[in-house]
Length: 414
Image 1 (cartoon, rainbow, N blue to C red):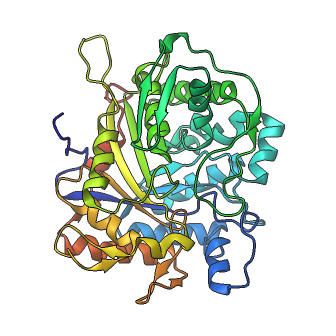
Image 2: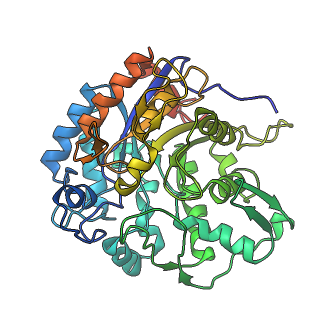
């Protein structure tokens, strides 16, 4: 198979992104250890959550060259993830004010007590209701609507004998015709193999049917608005299969939208480990680029795929990934996971569109002895920019390229 190295951004350029908040590192998801630095990092104490803090940080990030901002709404009183529409709308308004041409992305995680309460009151759609908002009405350019809980669909397909997953090599095999699949309505606790904080992997109880119907709703909403779809991969085989299914076999699936961004969260789970080599990194990027089957007839709409990459290595695992770099001008230098990810993304044939850093994924930096230190989103950006400058990588900041990047081919205005 011919390697794929093209991206939707110009050669030698990257969009620099920040995942500011997230759903994992919150006070209720962390059990205090007595280590003040570790507790500060893992409880999300450094994450700005008030309107004034958010506005100021967004402005600073924008002026530092950030042009993709990924947001999970947080309750400013509790610092927990929230599904409150008013918070998302406020964030959208602030982004238009201080980062007017930045790409805005909203998350749709099921994690946390306040999300569970919103789902109990308003149904599953509550956690992704912002997928149905145009940006001018308080929405975002991208909304992540496949991450962890949605893998219940794949687990259900495995149980029913439709597919066989091989997590050891990240592959899958279809065993039965997928058009006959009917999702189970059995509600069960979501048990997903992911790396997380004490409560960060608590996705509550749901069913494959609920998640399937929610996916259909979000696809309908994004298609109606003429806006892109976005997913996160947290396990290689299951995440890749679900995206492939949504794109190529789900009735009224992602082909209707025509535009998909895939975020690879390296280190999020044992089944999507942080790569020890550039070759391992590039293999998964190319796999994501190929997720849409080639179009062999004029009636099938193309699906334009971009790829963003993030380092989701937990603080307690960081030292395990301090290794020599195996590519580029810093080859042989011993660096931590975030720096190595930036180096991999900066390679001219990497095929990456967005390099994502931020407190959602790695709310820490490592000192010279690989000990943890707290950090900020802005500090992570400047550290990352130093790596990119060393590799001659240019940041995408021009409005025309950014507008084209988020555009849906054949959508409104096309």
